[in-house]
Length: 300
Length: 234
Image (cartoon, rainbow over all chains, first blue to last red; front, side, top):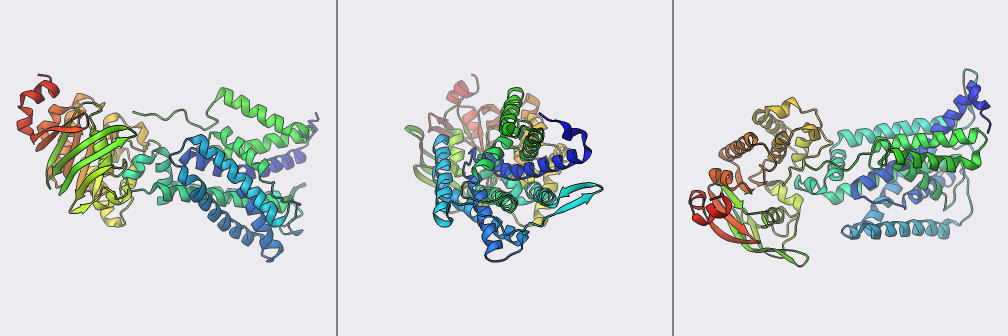
């Protein structure tokens, strides 16, 4: 292990920005897991693959239709939003009253379906966004060089989170989401349509995954199985933060990214997943419901 | 204004409601009394469209509603205060009340109704920013009733509003129900506290094992030997 990066202020700042930017992507994806879990108690294993579809939609928008990345992102959000709503309607809604394990297995099935339909459609080989589509180069903060893409990722994530907070806290449909996830029967008695609220939750979660997917795709490369790794990490982040909790998913995601980066920067990159899981296990031993998760809801 | 005829509800193989028939006239308080598991809550859930009926009819203002979706029933003017209050604990008092008005679009009317509810329950106004889960049981019951009133119902269904409350609050809640009724809302009240329910109701039905066994004016039932023995403790 090599901790010298800690003693150099510039490399410390660079590593933290790296960690936060990776963590931002985990956090965006974790939000979808946590919101869907909050509302229908389902771990949507297809969520990482929605991120992958988002990355491909973004890729085609940029590479084929020559759109600027930000516009490609909007298209990807719309496409994945629709895809998420469709998946819920076709695959999960008919199982609303089925045992939870049935729906979970269906979600795994949907995950494979998305992956291999994409393999069939676009091929299994990796593709890269055209060079420079996500900006590039370094920004000098004093004498510290910071990768501009990383800053974009953090900035876009912050904007998305503010938008999400606004929707969930202030808008009528956001309040309905909270009401349904707290007590679906009682929400129905208010005249809230549970099905429509669930659809909206999938729309929102899938849209956020698309943003994460486009950013990942633009920074690295894309392939039809690229959603598995971040999907799993985002799931961990959601559990870490307390599944069902929106701020929990944000914190969990960023923390996970930072932990991985710290381990990688210390020269133990082969062990970064190990470190992430060990910390997850420790957190869950001390707080089984995650950092911001709640214990069993009070029933008076 | 409201009528149930020959309603049957099943939970799997359990026959929870057996040919239940009852009527509620406009302006009345009608109470449905029975012991635990008699089917009182099931009756209300069937009315609200949460638990589907197997057969029978439910009519409200001349329309059949037994197949109508829960959200539509709220829109038609039936609000339901569920058993155990079921407020949204992680939402503020104000947000809970807003949820009650979920289907309404008339901002002005919503504001007026909110003021009325705050006038009726001043404690809710004092706590409007507080999370509803932090309220006491009695306050939560007030919130649950206030939330249901925010839909401006013509018929208010109340499921065990006195459950788990201190005796003083029980008195208070029944006074409030009477008052809500006197200001123009028809009430259907499900209660285990038969004494209190009969004291404010106009008419009553007794439900046993999913079937109606007695019905009549509340005073008359309160004085019948059978009811006294079974529900009023001698």
